[in-house]
Image 1: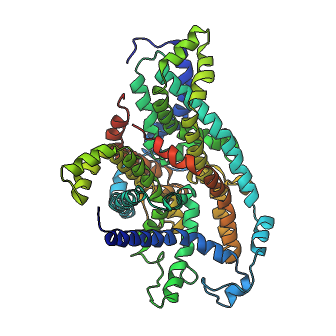
Image 2 (image 1 turned 120 degrees about the vertical axis):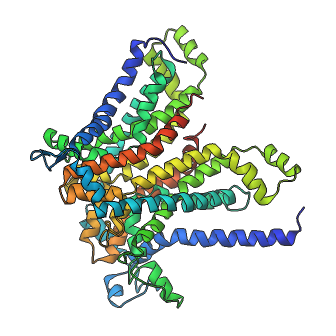
Image 3 (image 1 turned 135 degrees about the horizontal axis):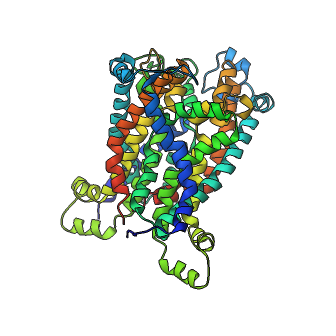
Length: 279
Length: 288
């Protein structure tokens, strides 16, 4: 065994390093919070970031909620997520079911065909989507956003679910077929329930990707009342460019949903993200 | 296991995903490729110009600058993000008090939208009120400067801001990889006399091969796609100093309305991506 002096020195060094990094990691949130609680008067009097404000300016938060469109951005984002996440995963699961459990020619080829989309840049779809959406009047619609989000989620979802479905023993389906189940029943009553862990992973990663997507939303949504949080927040920052307290309060409010989800489901995030690349 | 014929149900189950995939991913790629041979914008006013866009592309100083910046970003990612997240994973794989807390803390920025990260870091870099310059004033060392509007520092400032959210994901992947290494292997190597760095480089690293493939390819692909953070922090400025290919494509298409030219930049991006994707996909599609 090593002498305890050396171990102790190592421990101190370890914690010092971790605490230093933790402070850097918290600094951005601290900056937001400290700025959001200062009143306009404090800024004019040149109060520094590390000074206590003359009073805690909760009114910044109230003003943002009353005046800004923050709640409407959240509503739009929630509607898109509620449409996209379950439907997208259902379609991905159907494709993965076909790729792993049904008699299919060129299954590896078809799988590769599907996962190539994961790596392609979304930029390549921007000009065609602008042209087609203009013709079909799909700008500023939930459907317009929903459709491309489902499409860009397919590759990752199919990859994760195929990986999971392969590991489910075939005896399960065979027993169900003998009991007289149809293929659709085997899919919905056997495979989907067994795959809860993989589906939980996908729900979380899909939710994050959809909730946070900026580029496609910035093209497809131009009306303020249809904007999701990432596009709305940029608009908001433009409007509040001189009201620092309000600006930081608004940004913090916009982070609340996603941070709450993270705190509640933290376990699944970490386990799921790692499981997604299980080999 | 390959089959001679497909059963109808197999096709039916694939169909919905297939239709959406083809119509919203593959068709746009083909259409972009076609449009890249035209100059024009909007719905009409398209004029065939052959390979002119690509010729122009290779002579476009700003494009070459943004390509260079994207390559710099990728190199920095491969060296810095990879080693930093591996280091964190190695530390957080040890047993000590507070380990779960630190894991959760270092991962949390990953869930925040990139565009929000950019807005937050604008505050960190703010010339008067930002954390960095205020901090430098508070500790009495004057290293404050205009981080984002200085062409020398703007790209690096964006990169540093991106690290806040970028290390969480590879850190978790490395942690999973490390947990997959059995204690017995490490113990056996120890008995054979491997220690410290030697143990790390000749046992741990080779056993993490699969994890490295996934981490490096996703980081490279992610680096080429980097967009939100640049748009939110500098919008490619000052004077294109922090422009990357994705943001340049976007600004050419939607700010300058050079749609055909934008499409040719997008196609060029696909070409670069394919160089990374093809080996990666063949790795992921192994049948086991």
